[in-house]
Length: 551
Ligand SMILES: O=P(O)(O)OC[C@H]1O[C@H](O)[C@H](O)[C@@H](O)[C@@H]1O
Image 1 (cartoon, rainbow, N blue to C red):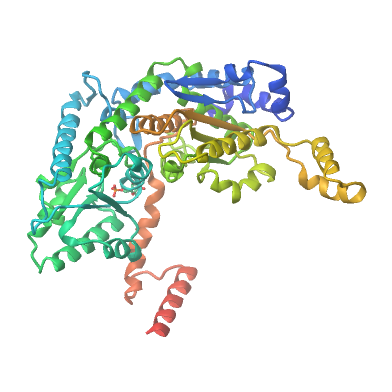
Image 2 (image 1 turned 30 degrees about the vertical axis):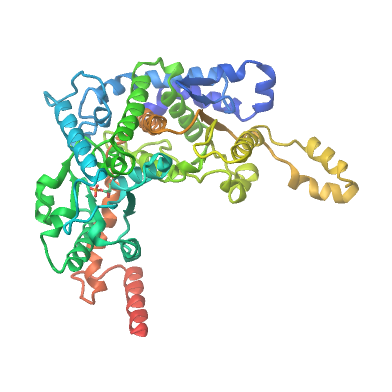
């Protein structure tokens, strides 16, 4: 047994979970008229309603015991103080410094990192103003109207999600595009609609070695140079880089004066607050980017300063642990009833699954408890007409997060009321279901009786007790979005601490990269130094045969 599963608080939760299986949310609400007040928490205009969870006051008490026993408060302090909590890479974890808006220092290895952070922000601001005012022109003197971000993973998902979410705040004049996939279709289709003379490329890569990004960047550069009559000098006017690796940026042919730096203490999936957020600032204006940082900083302070009982990321993290480790859930759905957030789940997938998809603890020992769940989701109401059937009547327990704004950024007739009615209805339907008796009475009202009624009845029952959190805010804004993203970052952190894993490395993505590099020559018809496994060999042979047929 690991020290976690052997701990008193874990054992108490395991015993308590036995009781949870007989609870009904209808009964829990009936027994406590103030359940909503007791099981909700506020941060500014953001409300977390966690009353529709399979949890009692005792559950929360035991989960908070677990959090204290695992020293969530100590780890939190170590993270923001710049201690090297990413031990397998020997790095500090300081995305909070990127949005640190106070005048106080943040020290790593005895050095205050804030002057550098502010210096890069100042350069980003200046660059944004030059581009947005059209003072900085393209090589042929044209206005630069289109920005293409070339990056993948953390160098794509965060900025892309934020640009999509905050598009209603964008001022006209500049369009932002994102290219991530090495599939030629991504770059080819994006470039097809663009005029090279008016296009600025942002090559975004922490390492500046990622195969997809380097391949896309090289092809984009070739496209540009060709359209500029072979003049390499055009690259300096049309390419900037965002990276931690100046040497590789230089080797690629981008002058470091066109580079925006960041640091090894920023994880890729936590990097949208750094210069990786440049496309956000170019799209929305630098002031909006700063509002995003402000919102995240406010959530950082809430996370650091609020007692665990009322601490939103702590509560969300603990409820996730409750379902994953004690009630057998293996997935978690994120369902924004806010179309602006249509890429939110995609960003959270990397944030959560790359952080907590681990099966060894900090010391490298195999864990004997489930860790990070599969995170997935789509915006409502679309999901209702697709996969909600399984949420309501399937055999899996899938806790859900619903996110909704009280008011729309783009109001139109009664659309938003209908959106909210659906959000409220779905969370209630999941929690309270429809009993056999209710279904029977409904069918009888519809004129059914006897065998026909009995045959249909089981299909019409909704078991309920399907848990959800609701996150309700006034209206999406750069500030509110910043705080929502930071909320999830800290939720993931809390869970990583409980599970005693390093949430900040990602060794699991390396093997596939190594094998792809080994296999690549075979696709160009070269013999491999070592024969691949039988399946790979068979698939390669089939690719070759299909290509021969095509030729
Ligand atoms: O920014 P880059 O160095 O190009 O990395 C891009 C992405 O690829 C890697 O394989 C990691 O899995 C991600 O964490 C990272 O965000």
